[in-house]
Length: 126
View 1 (cartoon, rainbow, N blue to C red):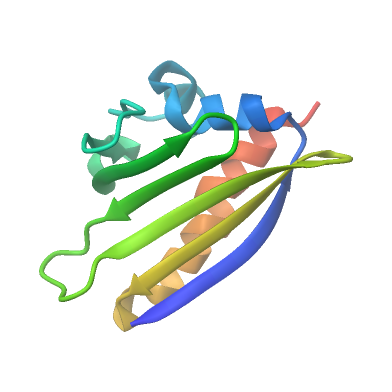
View 2: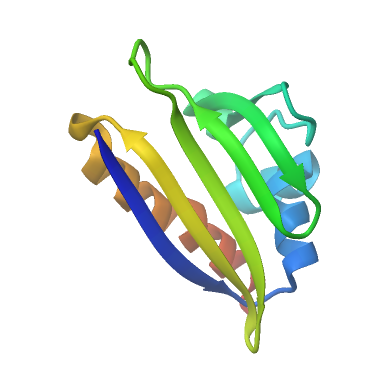
């Protein structure tokens, strides 16, 4: 199991980024795909029409999202924590993804950089 941590700068306010990550219609706009999301702890979610699935653990509006991502039968939960910080250029998003299965690590890092945060940054580019 591996962990991944990275900071991304998004040209939008922390409140806008939080809504983009938790509000179903906005999620579908920037991902370009079906999303099921309710920002309530204990609810399950699905992004990119089921490519990413898991359970929502914690929400602090405008500041923090914690989710468990499912990777089949693994002994320890894979947890994603996104913290949003004000930044002169908008928002600094601090990502920490723990317990990524070794065989999925490279694909996950690429997905975070290109599809997830890459698409979100592109969505807010003028």
